[in-house]
Length: 157
Image (cartoon, rainbow, N blue to C red; front, side, top):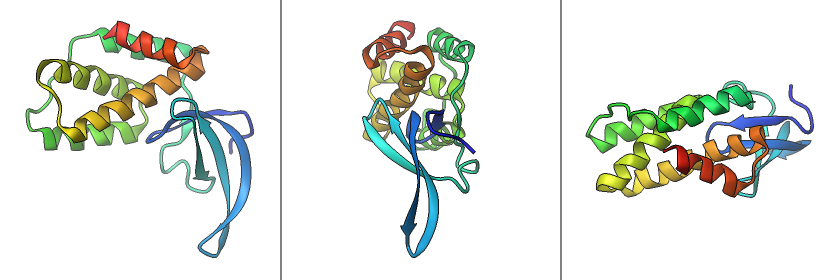
């Protein structure tokens, strides 16, 4: 169980700090929830304490792992299918994994595709979300501002 002030990552929303643990009644059931703030979207997210492992909630990574993710941004793009629909599904699974290296690969690959040939609307949204997820973890782990983290990502690509 996490505690107040812990820095965690929720794969689909990004990294944040637990600011409250509270009990809420939803659909007639009282359950305990982590309420954490995601710095990139400036939003609060509620995660049920029970089952947070199954949805991929984890502590933020180490600074070394963040630096490795930033390195990945500058590496050669990995080969991806030309079928945007299949590529979208594969990338969705990678984001859900919560693996920072996978998210960095998605940001790198989709950014480069977008620069060359433009992405579909769905992939543009996915790129934006993946960038925010990566940016939020960089911010929390390396104690950077939103702008500094975004600049680190852009510079690396």
